[in-house]
Image (cartoon, rainbow, N blue to C red; front, side, top):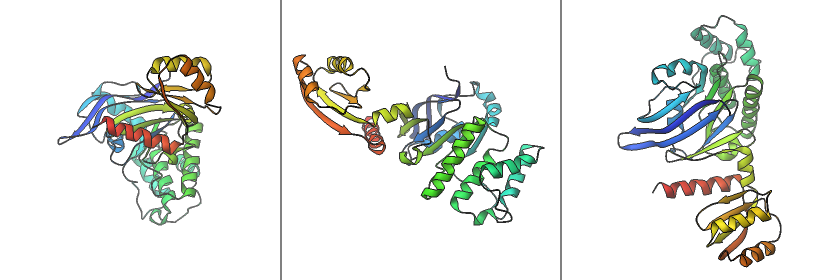
Length: 309
């Protein structure tokens, strides 16, 4: 079983009379890059604030690196580096000087870590240039380098690609993959745009109106975004059994009490229709669909919106 670096159980965060987080469950495995996806205002930043100790949940429990005792969570939070809500650096100082300030604050004696972090973030040639004059992508990488001081086991990033151009997103993606691979750092990264996390995240959590809709690996998500058959039937369990027998290598999902999806299907529907009719499944509709990441995301968000009514 994978080691959990963070677990949330039925977490509620209430501001006045509004539940920003509504019995949210969440698990982040060690070594993963967890893409936290949801529309603006869905509760992503609030969860990150609770995780990093900037806020406290109204109800529910959280666990950090195996520690469940609320009085001891601050000890484990020392293993977390974070850039939440806004980048924090001195705009009138160089990248090197900004990192020097953080080094002193962390009580780290080895000055060599500054050169190492500058190189990792691609900022080793910025010289005397003030951070305030950096491009947005450079500012983001500096903030991440500062958060990595002390080599935290978990890096938390709130919408780091927001506003970046394609080149900036590519550079940030390369940096985060490098951190994850070379240092084994677990990364939690949020975005309201699924495609911005494509080719980066190893798993995803979809949140809407404070509720976790689905947690899924990249492989599972890709399988659901293949061409598929959407079948509406009066006997969904019987239909699912028949489809499993006919297509044992394909993904299958019972979407509702009257609809089942067969993923990765690229053949003719005639054979499927014939088998379902012969087995008296009360077939009502069958149609081929072509899913995409964004289409899947939007359909999931719409389902979550309906369930919150």
